[in-house]
Image 1 (tube, rainbow, N blue to C red):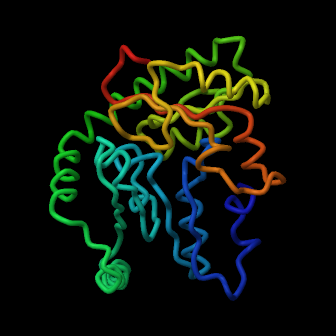
Image 2: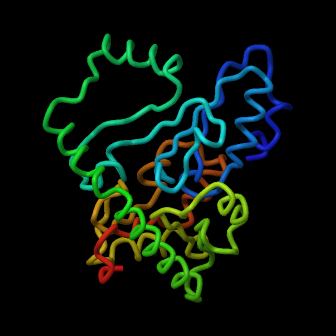
Length: 247
């Protein structure tokens, strides 16, 4: 986070690209996207953001000055957990070489997943609105629970990047992360006792899901890293787009 806030200090003559995400998995810290874009432009460096956690409904990186935005079509865009795919958007001159590489490597979506993705996109704004509302309700509920030591959600005023998120996002997403006083055994017991919320390492579908990052997305990161220390402490929840009663 410190490097992204002061890119001019870390650029060198070898720097060609800055690739980052916001909100960040799993702590949901938010990077000042416009500031990164301006620093990259001033330094002659390409900027690329993984916008999956935010979704293109909640955050529009290109309008904030970013060169290329990436989305996992597997997640919010499809919305039904039955497609694997991805999207890169940006100026035609920047996307053209990516498209050429895609064709040469053969990573072309076949007709049925393309149809399913097109179907999912029709309800994307409605689903994201429900994701946002459900996640905000869950985050506020957890923040009031004395058994929870910390809740990470950009929509909470207690989040360290709440003001940044308010400036660049029109909704705070469907991901909620929380700590249970830093104890792995407590997180494990909670994870294993849930019956309605499914245990799976994904997001953006109609199901409510939960995962332990240390066992999924952050697996293999050295234990000395901040990301691993954060992920050991708790769980990430993905409130569903539709099933409000399940939250």
